[in-house]
Figure 1 (tube, helix red, strand yellow):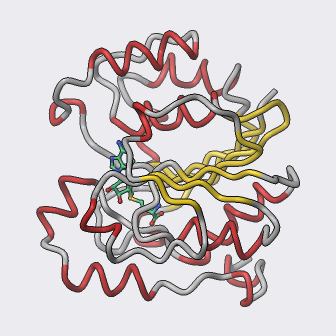
Figure 2 (cartoon, protein in one colour):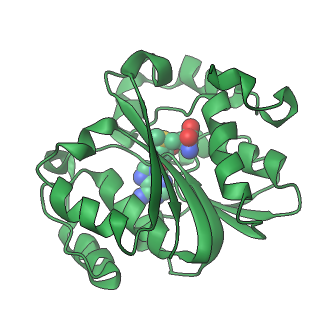
Length: 225
Ligand SMILES: C[S@@+](CC[C@H](N)C(=O)[O-])C[C@H]1O[C@@H](n2cnc3c(N)ncnc32)[C@H](O)[C@@H]1O
């Protein structure tokens, strides 16, 4: 079934802020920050999963121009959404739709609990990460899973966001499909199937999700045990 038949149009966010930003931001800046945007229909599907937990408080750890935040608010209009974003340039172009925006590094932020999380984190290979070891160790210690050096940055985001879900809380995380066969996959799978609460994985071929990036994509649907 085509994805676009599953969700009413009213719940699909527009992507004007993303289009406007992409038209002006230098591509090396976008690449350095991992700024690839969630297609609006996928954002709506992800929000739909999270809505099943009847969330009052929803987290978007890597807001970008805000498409996931807006999808969450469209699907859960009574919820409060807290959105993190580190890059000032994209923040000034974002449409957060009324969410509480924090100009902070999500990975260094606190550990408050949420009922739901929608996330498309930055994908950055480990060779490009600088001064990251202590933070990774701190997240791993909290999760009870030593995240290996070779892991992509999105692993830290998934582990931290999953740990910040309350029991029964739901997360929808859009990440590349490569994790299933990557060097760091074993421990990551164990984490996901245990405390991470993985329920389903939706896999997409590359051209269906990110027309401007050479990557496969998967959505992890989690529910905290
Ligand atoms: C893949 S984009 C996703 C944007 C948006 N959520 C979406 O789905 O279209 C990831 C975003 O995370 C931001 N980011 C990178 N590192 C971050 C950090 N440590 N804390 C918070 N945001 C970060 C990037 O600037 C980028 O806008």
